[in-house]
Length: 346
Image (cartoon, rainbow, N blue to C red; front, side, top):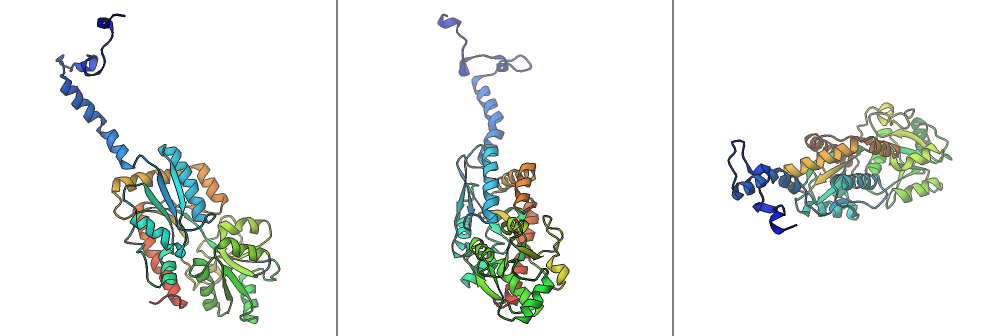
């Protein structure tokens, strides 16, 4: 083919769109402007999230419900956005290290983080002075799931109900202990509230995480524990552990025959133990909206709901404003609970 017969490309070519509806020819400058305006929406979408790996900070060791949720969402988010999503476990200082890293992150969507309902209460109990403000220092994206806890016992304990267990402890003051994953956790506080409400004296045995607490409970080294039902569920279903009550206002769907603490003791107001997703402060609305849309779509997908349900988690997926209200309300409830049992000053 001779050079003059080859089709011309680029701005020198004259395809059909070079002519207007009136038949007038468009100049090369007109074409550049048309292309630029036509691509503007695409460029705006591309700028919503940075074109590099997104990091999800989990302020706890691997294996917890927050870690399970983050990894599941991270995998689906990576597939949806077609870019890497990396889950980073940043434990230490009862979660304060990971939360502080999230607070200092650039507000560009490249770093988000998982949070639990009483993150700031734990921080205040452990560190005496708050290292972050859960209401003011972050951008709410959505609540991921409800993660209720329960009082479980080794089957060697004769009690088959909360009432029988309370009577057992009352008849053996300071002889029966309960374990949890650490001082200041929701599970520690639930036990102290149970002590105060029922007028009993369970001894508290703190562990460095839920896994070692469960191991000692299964081995009979401690008679009882208050732990996340996500981690205890397989052992309850297999008969290795017995669930006596659920610290929630509604029954646990996986074990609907077990009464809640509010059914047994109406005066108890259990704080909610949800898992949520936050961005750093001043995250632009376009980015937080994009992340919210993506994460809620993921949470509502049948396969993700199936996995979360199998792990004992109940999906939420609310709006950022509703999540902000949850954060504010539950922070007050948990602070009040910690103060009521002497773990936190008013």
